[in-house]
Amino acid sequence: MDLRRLSSFLAVVEEEHFGRAATRLFLSPAAVTQHVQQLERELGARLLDRGHGPVRPTAAGRRLVSHARTLLAAANAAAQDVAEAALEASAAPATAARGLRVGVMGHGSAEVTPAAVNAFRRARPDVPLRLVELNFTEHCSALREDRVDVAFVRPAIQREGIEVDILTTEQRIVAVSARSPLADAAREGLRVADIIDLPYLRLPRHTPRPFSEYLYFGEGERRGLDCAMNPHDVLTSVSAGRGAGSGLKSFARYYPWPGTVYVPVLDAPHAHSVLATRSGDPNPEVRIFRALTVALARELGPAVAR
Figure 1 (cartoon, helix red, strand yellow):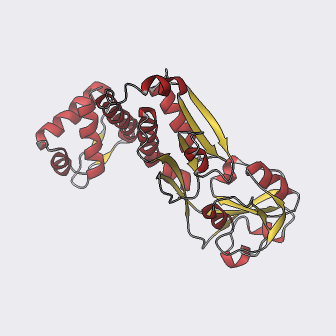
Figure 2: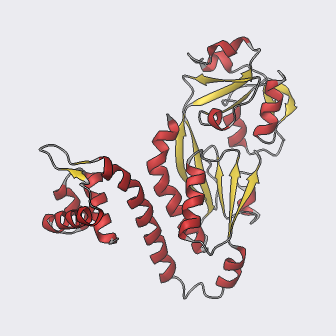
Figure 3: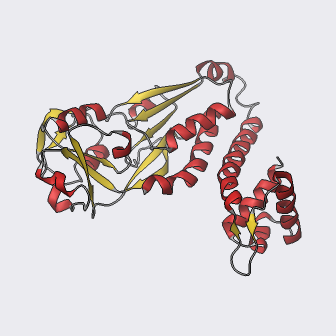
């Protein structure tokens, strides 16, 4: 599959216009049109609806968009990798032997996380990939201590030497015992004023401030009886009526738990999950994984947030 044709197709989809796509790609409109037509012939399907208004992808075109972004992202990362290979020759044996270590806090970035892991394994089948479970205190420490190469964490963080790519933006929820009076609001939701004084589970003292502010909605002061380091700790205590927890909306899909109810928080600011990496990491596998993940998040992120 010709990457130039994919690039032209994707540009038309994003610009919704052949002329604007051509300008963006520094090509003539005729060349862009030809690329799309060649791609349609190759795939045996009409990819774009060319009406009088904005150009829209067909059902087949919408399916191709996700693949096109992933393929182009992988190709760009591979090109950069090859261009820098001479500079990294001395480090290559150690990098290849270690492979890629992917840190995941809780459920990571929901559906984006397994999609990115699987895409990387398909793109780099010879590179070992290891998943590393991270607890609530390890936003940056696992990266800084070289225990992982990339990390799916939340919320968005700002730390020197750490770069983040926002992957999902989601509504906040609280986890309460099914016996709590607030459990009846699982359908209609509550407001921050209703849940701010819940006895949220305690965190270890060395937990980074961004996560504690995220968990407690920045203001909550009451604390539950137990200390939590991971989702299992949270849900075990919540179901027993020993405290409350909070998270992103996708948390409820990944952790259905007997005796626990998830209640939407209607007026809380939406929060992010991110992919964190070390700034300027020379490992080419990190660049490839990052490019694939960001491309997939553009497609899956809106669906995750629903």
